[in-house]
Amino acid sequence: MNPTPLPRIRVAVVFGGRSSEHTISCVTAGGVLSVMDPERYDVVPVGITLEGRWVLSSGKPDQLAITDGRLPEVSDEGGTVLLPAGSGLIEQSPGEVPRELGAVDLVFPLLHGPYGEDGTIQGMLEMAGVRYVGSGVLASAAGMDKHVMKILLRGAGLPVARHVLVEPGDWEPQRERVSAEVNELGWPVFVKPARAGSSMGVAKVAEPGDLDAAVLAAREHDPKVIIEEAIVGREIECGVLEGVSGAEPDASVLGEIRFDDSHEFYDFQAKYLPEDDVQLDIPADVPAGVSERMRRMAVAAFKALSCESLARVDFFLRPDGSVVVNEVNTMPGFTPTSMFPMLWEKSGLDYGALVDRMITTALKRPLGLR
Image (cartoon, rainbow, N blue to C red; front, side, top):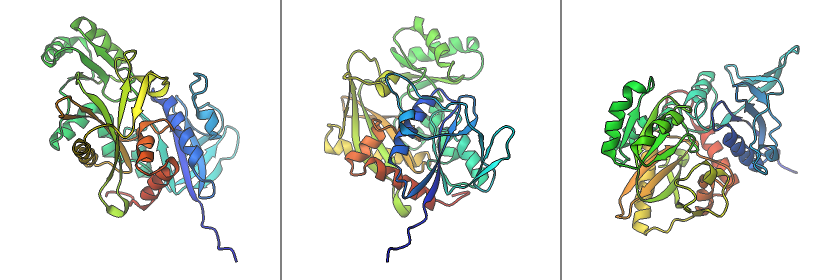
């Protein structure tokens, strides 16, 4: 007699969004959807358009991939998806009776950047009483804001790069103060939107005369900008996963990003449209003692921000062996060629098993304050 099959876990996979990282979110979703076992998961793919409308999507991975340079996007078609309190999804189309899509056990928000990775959707899901994969409101918001993140990391005793803050508001009244503080950092510097990712709006500035243009370009993505000292060192990354059943978080092996002189830094092209000019070395070729120290620092950074589920911690390893924490990404790139899943594959957890683990730990997490 065949055993009764277990009921499938109903997961709403949410992707797209209003940020400049809309495309990368779509690609991430395509990768995750391709490895979700249909015998274990009942998937409801929900896309968010660039205008912010939630729509029921086909969820076909091939339509969410970058193909021949074509960047995927959530189309503004289909009925609007609503998530009222109580975790039941509803689809509403003009001129039609609202259609119940049923309750979901979990939301998997594969959103990058503002209006998704920054605590906004996490707060909405908390209010609706729905479990979800990823960090909560505080860690998501702090991880998205590079200025706040550095304050928390420094407070936990972790080394971070020196930086200057360009506050929201008019640039002109700040120009003199910012220029003087940047001169103290030394040149070159990196100008970054404080709350953006995928290297959107980032520029390397070699001299004072180019600072204005870089700040204004970054402010097209975020009115809050940070200007960081340039760190000379190797770019090393480490994946961290929430521990199982209350155990300490787990750190992956380390990975190193190497690129040729056609890239001044790890920009959008290098991350998502790579050719032979970018190499990922996994595991990174670093001494065992350095590797263990960086893995401990990755876990410490994860805990300093109160992260949950997953994070990728990015470092600079200086020639003298000292380490600087660059960023903590609470929803790192999750495409099949992204560093985070590749780190875990080399650590013994393949893409599908990685998705399964994050869903399993999220389902066990209590709702509300924790």
